[in-house]
Amino acid sequence: MPNGQNCGPIADSELCSNRRGLTWRTWVFGAIMALSAGCTQTGQNAPVVAATPPPGPPPLPAPVPYPDAVLKVANAVFATAPVSAQPGGPRQVVVIDPLVNGITGEQSATTQQIGERLVALAREKYPQFDIQPFSAATVRQGPYVMVGTFTPVNAQGQTAGTREAYRFCLVMLDLHAGKTVAKSAARALPEGVNSTPIGFFRDSPAWSNDASIKSYIDACQATKVGDPINPTYLNGIVTASTISEAINAYDAGHYGDALELYQAAQRLPAGDQLRVYNGIYLTTWKLGHHDEAADAFGRVVDYGLAHNTLGVKILFRPGSTAFEAAAQTTGSYNMWLRQIADHSASRSTCLQVTGNTSPSGSAALNDQLSVLRAEYVKGQLETDAPGLRGHVIAAGAGAKSNLVGTGADDLSDALDRRVDFKVIPTC
Image (cartoon, rainbow, N blue to C red; front, side, top):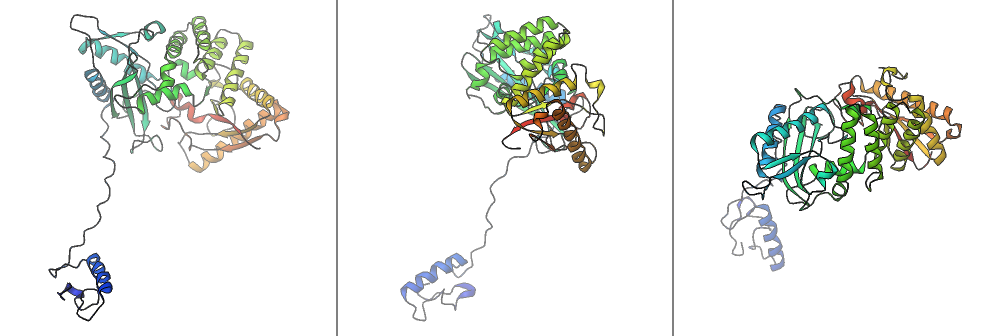
Protein backbone atom coordinates (compact mmCIF):
# COMPACT_ATOMS: atom_id res chain seq x y z
CA MET A 1 0.00 0.00 0.00
CA PRO A 2 2.78 2.61 0.57
CA ASN A 3 3.70 2.51 -3.19
CA GLY A 4 0.08 3.00 -4.19
CA GLN A 5 -0.89 -0.63 -4.84
CA ASN A 6 -4.49 -1.36 -5.57
CA CYS A 7 -6.61 -2.38 -2.58
CA GLY A 8 -9.56 -4.14 -4.11
CA PRO A 9 -12.90 -2.37 -4.12
CA ILE A 10 -11.63 0.52 -2.00
CA ALA A 11 -8.58 1.17 -4.19
CA ASP A 12 -9.42 4.86 -4.67
CA SER A 13 -10.18 5.59 -1.06
CA GLU A 14 -7.89 7.52 1.26
CA LEU A 15 -7.74 4.45 3.50
CA CYS A 16 -5.98 2.29 0.87
CA SER A 17 -3.60 4.69 -0.91
CA ASN A 18 -0.98 7.31 -0.18
CA ARG A 19 -0.99 8.58 -3.78
CA ARG A 20 -2.81 11.78 -2.78
CA GLY A 21 -0.12 13.09 -0.48
CA LEU A 22 -1.46 11.78 2.77
CA THR A 23 0.66 12.22 5.82
CA TRP A 24 2.43 9.24 7.30
CA ARG A 25 0.09 9.22 10.33
CA THR A 26 -2.97 9.24 8.10
CA TRP A 27 -1.55 6.43 6.01
CA VAL A 28 -0.84 4.27 9.08
CA PHE A 29 -4.35 4.82 10.33
CA GLY A 30 -5.69 4.02 6.91
CA ALA A 31 -3.62 0.85 6.65
CA ILE A 32 -4.94 -0.43 9.94
CA MET A 33 -8.49 0.30 8.88
CA ALA A 34 -7.95 -1.32 5.51
CA LEU A 35 -6.51 -4.48 7.01
CA SER A 36 -9.42 -4.68 9.40
CA ALA A 37 -11.74 -4.38 6.37
CA GLY A 38 -10.00 -7.28 4.63
CA CYS A 39 -7.45 -5.51 2.35
CA THR A 40 -4.28 -7.32 1.30
CA GLN A 41 -1.25 -6.23 -0.68
CA THR A 42 -2.17 -8.70 -3.38
CA GLY A 43 -5.33 -6.76 -4.12
CA GLN A 44 -7.55 -9.58 -2.93
CA ASN A 45 -10.25 -9.25 -0.27
CA ALA A 46 -9.63 -11.65 2.61
CA PRO A 47 -12.60 -13.91 3.21
CA VAL A 48 -14.73 -13.00 6.16
CA VAL A 49 -14.63 -15.88 8.63
CA ALA A 50 -17.42 -16.06 11.15
CA ALA A 51 -16.31 -16.41 14.74
CA THR A 52 -16.52 -20.00 15.89
CA PRO A 53 -18.83 -20.24 18.90
CA PRO A 54 -17.38 -21.98 21.92
CA PRO A 55 -18.27 -25.66 22.01
CA GLY A 56 -21.34 -26.44 24.08
CA PRO A 57 -21.67 -29.35 26.46
CA PRO A 58 -21.62 -32.74 24.76
CA PRO A 59 -25.05 -34.26 24.11
CA LEU A 60 -26.38 -36.44 26.86
CA PRO A 61 -26.23 -40.17 26.18
CA ALA A 62 -29.59 -41.73 25.39
CA PRO A 63 -31.23 -43.42 28.37
CA VAL A 64 -31.15 -47.21 28.29
CA PRO A 65 -33.42 -49.79 29.93
CA TYR A 66 -33.16 -49.60 33.69
CA PRO A 67 -31.54 -53.05 34.22
CA ASP A 68 -28.96 -52.29 31.52
CA ALA A 69 -28.06 -48.96 33.12
CA VAL A 70 -27.57 -50.62 36.49
CA LEU A 71 -25.39 -53.36 35.02
CA LYS A 72 -23.28 -50.94 32.98
CA VAL A 73 -22.55 -48.63 35.90
CA ALA A 74 -21.97 -51.40 38.41
CA ASN A 75 -19.53 -53.24 36.13
CA ALA A 76 -17.62 -50.02 35.46
CA VAL A 77 -17.18 -49.30 39.17
CA PHE A 78 -16.23 -52.85 40.19
CA ALA A 79 -13.86 -53.20 37.23
CA THR A 80 -11.98 -49.95 37.84
CA ALA A 81 -11.77 -49.94 41.65
CA PRO A 82 -8.16 -50.77 42.58
CA VAL A 83 -7.61 -53.85 44.70
CA SER A 84 -4.34 -54.52 46.49
CA ALA A 85 -5.30 -57.97 47.73
CA GLN A 86 -3.07 -60.75 46.44
CA PRO A 87 -4.57 -63.84 44.79
CA GLY A 88 -5.51 -66.28 47.50
CA GLY A 89 -5.14 -63.59 50.17
CA PRO A 90 -7.78 -61.59 52.04
CA ARG A 91 -10.37 -59.99 49.79
CA GLN A 92 -11.18 -56.27 49.76
CA VAL A 93 -14.07 -55.65 52.14
CA VAL A 94 -16.89 -53.52 50.67
CA VAL A 95 -20.03 -52.17 52.34
CA ILE A 96 -22.95 -50.52 50.58
CA ASP A 97 -24.44 -47.42 52.16
CA PRO A 98 -28.01 -47.78 50.79
CA LEU A 99 -28.62 -45.83 47.58
CA VAL A 100 -31.04 -42.91 47.60
CA ASN A 101 -32.99 -40.51 45.43
CA GLY A 102 -30.48 -37.74 44.65
CA ILE A 103 -32.89 -34.94 45.62
CA THR A 104 -35.03 -36.25 48.48
CA GLY A 105 -32.52 -38.64 50.05
CA GLU A 106 -35.22 -41.31 50.26
CA GLN A 107 -34.61 -44.98 49.68
CA SER A 108 -37.10 -46.62 47.34
CA ALA A 109 -38.07 -50.07 46.16
CA THR A 110 -35.79 -49.57 43.17
CA THR A 111 -32.75 -48.27 45.08
CA GLN A 112 -33.15 -51.28 47.36
CA GLN A 113 -33.23 -53.58 44.31
CA ILE A 114 -30.08 -51.92 42.94
CA GLY A 115 -28.29 -52.61 46.22
CA GLU A 116 -29.28 -56.27 46.00
CA ARG A 117 -28.08 -56.39 42.39
CA LEU A 118 -24.70 -54.95 43.39
CA VAL A 119 -24.23 -57.69 45.97
CA ALA A 120 -25.21 -60.40 43.50
CA LEU A 121 -22.95 -59.01 40.77
CA ALA A 122 -19.92 -58.84 43.07
CA ARG A 123 -20.43 -62.45 44.07
CA GLU A 124 -20.90 -63.56 40.44
CA LYS A 125 -18.08 -61.69 38.70
CA TYR A 126 -15.80 -59.94 41.19
CA PRO A 127 -14.54 -62.40 43.80
CA GLN A 128 -11.83 -59.94 44.83
CA PHE A 129 -14.53 -58.02 46.72
CA ASP A 130 -16.10 -59.24 49.95
CA ILE A 131 -19.49 -57.53 50.44
CA GLN A 132 -20.22 -57.11 54.14
CA PRO A 133 -23.24 -55.59 55.96
CA PHE A 134 -23.25 -51.82 56.41
CA SER A 135 -22.75 -51.73 60.17
CA ALA A 136 -20.76 -49.65 62.64
CA ALA A 137 -18.47 -52.61 63.37
CA THR A 138 -17.61 -53.11 59.69
CA VAL A 139 -17.23 -49.38 58.97
CA ARG A 140 -14.65 -49.06 61.74
CA GLN A 141 -12.43 -51.48 59.78
CA GLY A 142 -11.92 -48.86 57.05
CA PRO A 143 -13.44 -50.76 54.10
CA TYR A 144 -14.45 -49.59 50.65
CA VAL A 145 -17.91 -47.99 50.68
CA MET A 146 -20.29 -47.80 47.73
CA VAL A 147 -22.73 -44.89 47.62
CA GLY A 148 -25.12 -44.05 44.83
CA THR A 149 -28.03 -41.90 43.75
CA PHE A 150 -30.95 -42.70 41.45
CA THR A 151 -32.70 -39.49 40.50
CA PRO A 152 -35.59 -38.61 38.16
CA VAL A 153 -34.49 -35.98 35.59
CA ASN A 154 -35.88 -34.20 32.53
CA ALA A 155 -34.67 -34.51 28.93
CA GLN A 156 -31.81 -32.08 29.67
CA GLY A 157 -30.67 -34.11 32.66
CA GLN A 158 -32.00 -31.57 35.17
CA THR A 159 -34.16 -32.13 38.23
CA ALA A 160 -36.90 -29.81 36.99
CA GLY A 161 -39.86 -29.91 34.64
CA THR A 162 -41.22 -33.17 33.29
CA ARG A 163 -39.09 -36.10 34.45
CA GLU A 164 -38.34 -38.43 31.55
CA ALA A 165 -35.45 -40.58 32.76
CA TYR A 166 -33.43 -41.52 35.82
CA ARG A 167 -29.80 -40.56 36.39
CA PHE A 168 -27.84 -43.32 38.10
CA CYS A 169 -24.56 -42.34 39.81
CA LEU A 170 -22.37 -44.83 41.66
CA VAL A 171 -19.00 -44.37 43.36
CA MET A 172 -16.55 -46.43 45.37
CA LEU A 173 -14.93 -44.72 48.35
CA ASP A 174 -11.80 -45.92 50.12
CA LEU A 175 -12.31 -45.09 53.80
CA HIS A 176 -8.72 -45.99 54.68
CA ALA A 177 -7.24 -43.66 52.03
CA GLY A 178 -10.04 -41.10 52.40
CA LYS A 179 -10.66 -40.71 48.67
CA THR A 180 -12.89 -41.69 45.76
CA VAL A 181 -11.42 -44.61 43.80
CA ALA A 182 -14.06 -45.37 41.15
CA LYS A 183 -17.12 -43.72 39.63
CA SER A 184 -19.62 -44.25 36.81
CA ALA A 185 -22.99 -42.87 35.74
CA ALA A 186 -25.73 -43.57 33.20
CA ARG A 187 -29.29 -42.61 32.37
CA ALA A 188 -32.12 -45.12 32.65
CA LEU A 189 -35.56 -45.27 31.06
CA PRO A 190 -38.41 -45.05 33.59
CA GLU A 191 -40.03 -48.35 32.58
CA GLY A 192 -39.67 -50.89 35.37
CA VAL A 193 -38.63 -48.33 37.99
CA ASN A 194 -40.56 -48.45 41.26
CA SER A 195 -39.83 -45.21 43.09
CA THR A 196 -42.18 -45.92 46.02
CA PRO A 197 -40.24 -45.14 49.22
CA ILE A 198 -39.46 -48.03 51.55
CA GLY A 199 -41.43 -48.19 54.80
CA PHE A 200 -39.45 -45.79 56.96
CA PHE A 201 -39.32 -43.05 54.33
CA ARG A 202 -42.94 -43.64 53.33
CA ASP A 203 -44.02 -43.11 56.95
CA SER A 204 -41.64 -40.28 57.85
CA PRO A 205 -43.76 -37.19 58.52
CA ALA A 206 -41.23 -34.50 57.63
CA TRP A 207 -38.48 -33.62 55.20
CA SER A 208 -35.69 -31.06 55.41
CA ASN A 209 -32.58 -30.29 53.39
CA ASP A 210 -30.52 -32.24 55.90
CA ALA A 211 -26.75 -31.68 55.84
CA SER A 212 -26.03 -35.39 56.36
CA ILE A 213 -28.16 -36.38 53.37
CA LYS A 214 -26.64 -33.63 51.25
CA SER A 215 -23.14 -34.86 52.11
CA TYR A 216 -24.08 -38.38 50.96
CA ILE A 217 -25.45 -37.04 47.67
CA ASP A 218 -22.40 -34.82 47.14
CA ALA A 219 -20.09 -37.76 47.86
CA CYS A 220 -21.54 -39.32 44.72
CA GLN A 221 -22.62 -36.51 42.42
CA ALA A 222 -20.09 -33.78 43.20
CA THR A 223 -16.93 -35.84 43.13
CA LYS A 224 -14.50 -37.44 40.70
CA VAL A 225 -11.95 -40.21 41.03
CA GLY A 226 -9.07 -39.09 43.24
CA ASP A 227 -11.11 -36.50 45.15
CA PRO A 228 -11.14 -36.64 48.95
CA ILE A 229 -14.31 -38.00 50.50
CA ASN A 230 -16.79 -35.32 51.55
CA PRO A 231 -15.74 -34.58 55.16
CA THR A 232 -19.29 -34.31 56.51
CA TYR A 233 -20.10 -37.70 55.04
CA LEU A 234 -16.85 -39.22 56.28
CA ASN A 235 -17.29 -37.90 59.82
CA GLY A 236 -20.87 -39.16 59.99
CA ILE A 237 -20.53 -42.60 58.44
CA VAL A 238 -20.64 -44.52 61.75
CA THR A 239 -23.87 -42.69 62.60
CA ALA A 240 -25.18 -43.42 59.10
CA SER A 241 -24.54 -47.13 59.56
CA THR A 242 -26.43 -47.12 62.87
CA ILE A 243 -29.35 -45.29 61.24
CA SER A 244 -29.33 -47.83 58.40
CA GLU A 245 -29.65 -50.66 60.92
CA ALA A 246 -32.51 -48.78 62.61
CA ILE A 247 -34.32 -48.32 59.28
CA ASN A 248 -33.98 -52.05 58.55
CA ALA A 249 -35.40 -52.88 61.99
CA TYR A 250 -38.30 -50.46 61.48
CA ASP A 251 -39.15 -51.91 58.07
CA ALA A 252 -39.07 -55.41 59.58
CA GLY A 253 -41.60 -54.33 62.23
CA HIS A 254 -39.10 -54.57 65.09
CA TYR A 255 -40.04 -51.20 66.54
CA GLY A 256 -38.43 -51.66 69.95
CA ASP A 257 -35.08 -52.56 68.39
CA ALA A 258 -35.43 -49.68 65.93
CA LEU A 259 -36.12 -47.20 68.74
CA GLU A 260 -32.98 -48.30 70.61
CA LEU A 261 -30.90 -47.89 67.46
CA TYR A 262 -32.32 -44.43 66.69
CA GLN A 263 -31.62 -43.35 70.26
CA ALA A 264 -28.08 -44.74 69.99
CA ALA A 265 -27.59 -42.79 66.76
CA GLN A 266 -28.82 -39.61 68.45
CA ARG A 267 -26.07 -39.91 71.06
CA LEU A 268 -23.34 -40.07 68.42
CA PRO A 269 -21.52 -36.88 67.30
CA ALA A 270 -23.39 -36.77 63.97
CA GLY A 271 -26.74 -37.75 65.48
CA ASP A 272 -28.42 -34.36 65.11
CA GLN A 273 -30.27 -35.15 61.89
CA LEU A 274 -33.83 -35.45 60.75
CA ARG A 275 -33.77 -39.19 60.02
CA VAL A 276 -33.05 -39.76 63.70
CA TYR A 277 -35.87 -37.51 64.95
CA ASN A 278 -38.32 -38.94 62.42
CA GLY A 279 -37.29 -42.43 63.51
CA ILE A 280 -37.77 -41.77 67.22
CA TYR A 281 -41.19 -40.27 66.50
CA LEU A 282 -42.31 -43.14 64.27
CA THR A 283 -41.17 -45.94 66.58
CA THR A 284 -42.72 -44.41 69.72
CA TRP A 285 -45.99 -43.93 67.80
CA LYS A 286 -45.92 -47.52 66.52
CA LEU A 287 -45.27 -48.76 70.07
CA GLY A 288 -48.41 -46.94 71.23
CA HIS A 289 -46.59 -44.32 73.32
CA HIS A 290 -48.55 -41.42 71.86
CA ASP A 291 -47.62 -38.80 74.46
CA GLU A 292 -43.93 -39.59 73.93
CA ALA A 293 -44.55 -39.52 70.19
CA ALA A 294 -46.02 -36.02 70.42
CA ASP A 295 -42.91 -34.85 72.27
CA ALA A 296 -40.75 -36.56 69.66
CA PHE A 297 -42.62 -34.78 66.88
CA GLY A 298 -41.89 -31.54 68.69
CA ARG A 299 -38.18 -32.31 68.28
CA VAL A 300 -38.81 -32.84 64.56
CA VAL A 301 -40.37 -29.36 64.47
CA ASP A 302 -37.50 -27.81 66.42
CA TYR A 303 -35.00 -29.31 64.00
CA GLY A 304 -36.87 -27.89 61.01
CA LEU A 305 -37.29 -24.43 62.51
CA ALA A 306 -33.61 -24.35 63.55
CA HIS A 307 -32.63 -25.15 59.96
CA ASN A 308 -35.23 -22.79 58.52
CA THR A 309 -37.13 -25.36 56.50
CA LEU A 310 -39.53 -28.16 57.31
CA GLY A 311 -41.68 -29.93 54.75
CA VAL A 312 -44.50 -31.86 56.42
CA LYS A 313 -46.48 -34.51 54.55
CA ILE A 314 -49.92 -33.15 55.35
CA LEU A 315 -51.91 -34.65 52.50
CA PHE A 316 -55.29 -33.41 51.32
CA ARG A 317 -58.13 -34.99 49.42
CA PRO A 318 -57.85 -34.40 45.66
CA GLY A 319 -58.95 -30.87 44.76
CA SER A 320 -59.85 -30.10 48.38
CA THR A 321 -58.62 -28.42 51.55
CA ALA A 322 -59.88 -31.34 53.66
CA PHE A 323 -57.26 -33.66 55.13
CA GLU A 324 -56.84 -37.14 53.66
CA ALA A 325 -57.87 -39.32 56.60
CA ALA A 326 -56.44 -42.51 55.09
CA ALA A 327 -52.94 -40.96 55.06
CA GLN A 328 -52.89 -40.48 58.84
CA THR A 329 -51.58 -43.92 59.74
CA THR A 330 -48.52 -42.78 61.68
CA GLY A 331 -49.95 -39.86 63.61
CA SER A 332 -52.62 -37.21 63.69
CA TYR A 333 -52.34 -34.12 61.50
CA ASN A 334 -54.08 -32.16 64.26
CA MET A 335 -51.37 -33.20 66.72
CA TRP A 336 -48.67 -32.29 64.21
CA LEU A 337 -50.15 -28.82 63.71
CA ARG A 338 -50.47 -28.26 67.46
CA GLN A 339 -46.79 -29.07 67.89
CA ILE A 340 -45.84 -26.77 65.00
CA ALA A 341 -47.99 -23.98 66.43
CA ASP A 342 -46.70 -24.35 70.01
CA HIS A 343 -43.03 -24.57 69.06
CA SER A 344 -43.30 -21.67 66.60
CA ALA A 345 -45.10 -19.51 69.14
CA SER A 346 -42.52 -20.27 71.83
CA ARG A 347 -39.82 -18.96 69.48
CA SER A 348 -41.84 -15.82 68.64
CA THR A 349 -40.98 -16.51 65.01
CA CYS A 350 -42.58 -15.27 61.82
CA LEU A 351 -43.63 -18.26 59.78
CA GLN A 352 -44.41 -18.70 56.11
CA VAL A 353 -46.70 -21.62 55.31
CA THR A 354 -46.46 -22.74 51.68
CA GLY A 355 -48.74 -25.26 50.03
CA ASN A 356 -47.47 -27.54 47.25
CA THR A 357 -49.20 -29.73 44.68
CA SER A 358 -48.14 -32.36 42.19
CA PRO A 359 -47.74 -31.26 38.53
CA SER A 360 -50.83 -33.10 37.30
CA GLY A 361 -53.78 -30.94 36.27
CA SER A 362 -54.01 -27.25 35.44
CA ALA A 363 -51.09 -25.14 36.65
CA ALA A 364 -53.41 -22.22 37.41
CA LEU A 365 -55.74 -24.40 39.46
CA ASN A 366 -52.80 -26.00 41.26
CA ASP A 367 -51.46 -22.57 42.19
CA GLN A 368 -54.86 -21.54 43.56
CA LEU A 369 -55.37 -24.83 45.41
CA SER A 370 -51.94 -24.63 47.03
CA VAL A 371 -52.76 -21.16 48.40
CA LEU A 372 -56.12 -22.32 49.76
CA ARG A 373 -54.47 -25.27 51.52
CA ALA A 374 -51.83 -23.00 53.03
CA GLU A 375 -54.56 -20.63 54.21
CA TYR A 376 -56.37 -23.53 55.85
CA VAL A 377 -53.22 -24.67 57.68
CA LYS A 378 -52.50 -21.08 58.71
CA GLY A 379 -55.98 -20.88 60.26
CA GLN A 380 -55.39 -24.12 62.17
CA LEU A 381 -52.08 -22.85 63.54
CA GLU A 382 -53.63 -19.58 64.71
CA THR A 383 -56.47 -21.49 66.38
CA ASP A 384 -54.03 -23.73 68.22
CA ALA A 385 -51.74 -20.84 69.24
CA PRO A 386 -53.59 -17.49 69.14
CA GLY A 387 -50.29 -15.72 69.79
CA LEU A 388 -49.30 -16.58 66.22
CA ARG A 389 -51.93 -14.26 64.75
CA GLY A 390 -50.09 -11.69 62.68
CA HIS A 391 -47.00 -13.89 62.65
CA VAL A 392 -48.01 -16.35 59.92
CA ILE A 393 -48.38 -15.75 56.19
CA ALA A 394 -49.74 -18.21 53.64
CA ALA A 395 -48.40 -18.78 50.14
CA GLY A 396 -48.83 -21.30 47.35
CA ALA A 397 -46.14 -22.77 45.11
CA GLY A 398 -48.31 -25.07 43.02
CA ALA A 399 -45.92 -27.59 41.45
CA LYS A 400 -42.98 -25.18 41.20
CA SER A 401 -41.08 -26.70 44.15
CA ASN A 402 -41.59 -30.37 43.39
CA LEU A 403 -38.86 -32.61 44.77
CA VAL A 404 -39.85 -35.80 42.94
CA GLY A 405 -41.72 -34.34 39.98
CA THR A 406 -42.99 -37.54 38.38
CA GLY A 407 -46.66 -36.60 38.70
CA ALA A 408 -47.55 -40.11 39.86
CA ASP A 409 -49.90 -38.79 42.57
CA ASP A 410 -49.27 -41.78 44.81
CA LEU A 411 -46.97 -42.70 47.68
CA SER A 412 -43.91 -42.31 45.44
CA ASP A 413 -44.32 -38.53 45.17
CA ALA A 414 -46.12 -37.68 48.41
CA LEU A 415 -43.36 -35.16 49.18
CA ASP A 416 -44.55 -33.06 46.25
CA ARG A 417 -47.86 -32.51 48.03
CA ARG A 418 -46.27 -31.41 51.31
CA VAL A 419 -46.79 -28.21 53.29
CA ASP A 420 -43.59 -26.23 53.88
CA PHE A 421 -42.93 -24.25 57.06
CA LYS A 422 -40.19 -21.67 56.89
CA VAL A 423 -38.97 -19.06 59.35
CA ILE A 424 -38.91 -15.60 57.77
CA PRO A 425 -37.32 -12.39 59.07
CA THR A 426 -40.48 -10.27 59.15
CA CYS A 427 -44.20 -10.86 59.08
